[in-house]
Length: 392
Ligand SMILES: Cc1ncc(COP(=O)(O)O)c(C=O)c1O
Image: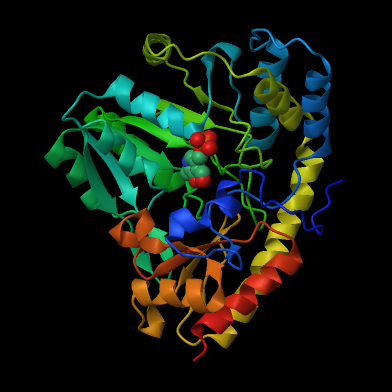
């Protein structure tokens, strides 16, 4: 169904990944640098999604559009079939992205000066957005052993108590690191949050990208019986490579929370998804399943290749296969090099752009994030560049 071997020229398409290297990495010339950083894929979107957008484009009137029940049904069916999660239409509130959803939740459910808890290392908007909204970010660093992460429940609970935390932003599955939380851990976090009156925002944008037969567990399901209040955000944009189309939604069973979110959306004049995003989201959830199955195989093969080749060639580098995502979290602490030295080698010698670990907070120091959602030939090129960067 998909063509995952074809190399598609993305330069000149206003691509953040390919056309913004100079600005993001501060290099004088980015012409020869291979980007394997920001989380979008170098693959064409599924054909049914392109067709749906094309059909919408073929109708020449682009007036106001709304989210029809067909669109909500596509979401509900997807969540039920993929994740065993039964969601009612009225629980859904559509947003332009998961990041805007985080911003909306922070603004709606906390006041200036309130404390927001995150487990680090984590996706940067989890700490930049609350800080920009004058909230206080409380970091609970994850425990890490040989690249495997877990929550320190004692300090998690203590951090909530000491700071009167109002909101916990969870990344489920986790980015970076790509690990899936166990049902027990999710339930334990939910139990603590319920007991302490902390609302949970669960970012589940990577939920569909489960590897190795792992199954995603929605926080809303794991928390059953705890009494925790949860807003979940999901999107088809990571799964089907539609980040530039911008479509996501927030889901909560709690009527009061929903009303508050709706009020906030109206206060900011947020409108529905645009006509193309609605068409893309519906087609993706209705018809994208087979494409996703193929994609996951390609990602697994690419990951296996990187995991086999890089650590064998570069002493001191370790890579674990994640449970989810198309992102590898590469541990280079054994090389003894600093982040500055590593980034210098990668950019100037290897000509390869990866994400430095500290972008995900100080807890990410010693790691690099590598995006392997690209044709095998590109990944092979990336491996060669990585090895070159580290070879004296
Ligand atoms: C955990 C997480 N949340 C949200 C996003 C981006 O969401 P959106 O593009 O819908 O704003 C990303 C993108 O990498 C992500 O990794």
